[in-house]
Amino acid sequence: MMDEDVLREAVYQKLRACKGVTDDQAAWEVAFHMSDWAHNIRDMLDVLDDPASISAEEIYDKLLAFCIHVPEHLHEAVNQFKRLA
Image (cartoon, rainbow, N blue to C red; front, top):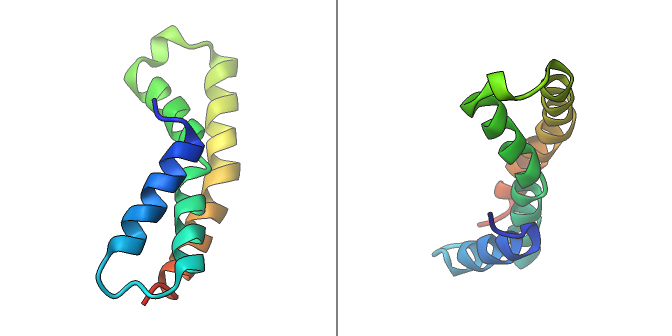
């Protein structure tokens, strides 16, 4: 999987290249808020792919981490998207 910093920079550059995007800081914020939880998505995919191979405690920890970390980032990404154009 791609390193989160590399992912963030790639998303940022692609957003900046979009027609109508005028706010570089908002583009960076969206890229940050959509990449900072990449490790949580990987953990969720592990759970969804083969829950039988993961202990109950690991599933609990991964789900809890996802639920705590991701929603705030999604909320802020939406706010920053509104500033892009």
